[in-house]
Amino acid sequence: METWQCVKGCGACCHLDPSDRPDLAEYLTPEEMTHYLSLVGEGGWCINFDHQKRDCRIYEQRPRFCRVKPDIFEQMYGIEREEFNEFAIDCCRQQIEGVYGPDSTEMHHYNQEIIKDS
Image 1 (cartoon, rainbow, N blue to C red):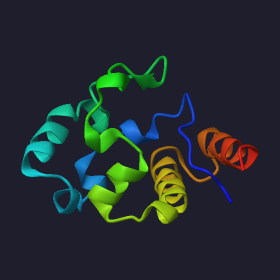
Image 2: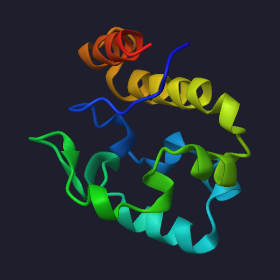
Image 3: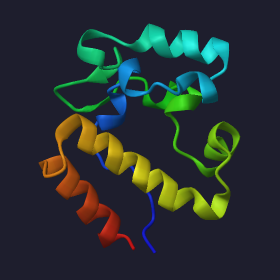
């Protein structure tokens, strides 16, 4: 079984373009939606994403909707804990493909890291 993990140097999840996520209102509270939209910067990237280091400048203080944890996914998306890994991995792969492409270095790196830790 594959186990979800964040892969350093990716940052695909920091591409917040709302046009890529038409269902935001289904899982964000009105306050979270306002906060989410305030984070969208140039090119749809989060204003807290460091493009050179390819990481989050506020990682420890990031909002709930940026956290990939079983309890949060259960609250936000109704995903049971036993479904978390598969769902989170699928979300990451979809986001990486949308941002960088299906044959990108980021996708290959992600898949290698997920398989390596399985």
